[in-house]
Length: 243
Image (cartoon, rainbow, N blue to C red; front, top):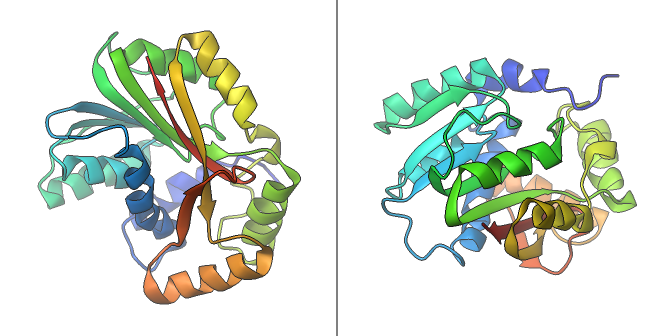
């Protein structure tokens, strides 16, 4: 079976904004995700932000609703088309472009903020992506991200449970070997020139397989994703870095 299979994003492009689809879980994760980002951004109004790996546009529209001047890139042309279509129907002007994260199609020092969520574990070259993010950020600009740790626990939950057993994530979307340990990411960020790095656990669905399973089932009933920002980065983690 092919791993890190990004064809999933082409297949789901037209279904991205359907609340009944599994991919819509990512929409609900935006709220707790940005509650963390808000610790470092007191006022989003008027900022220029880039969403790297924007998919169908969940984070882009979340920021646009806050008055952000938003751009978004994604390797999937079909996702970009779907995102553009939805933005237009929602009355948002978002600059969407099809591109890979290793080659961001914007000039140096263009953005106040770069957001990269659910993406770093999929790219071909993480260090090159970080270098590109650093390049397009203005001095003192913020890099806001989340990704998945490479641990036995993440293999158990993200691959075995959510992909293979529950099928809540398409099989083959992730490759455990591409998951990134926080220490690795910190080293790459520092090597690129980033400072003031802060990484926290992005604890989705609680501790223990039984609790995660219960909370995931409950999510489909309520639409609420129980996420805690804490020190447990053993599966998912979230962070910021400053140029």
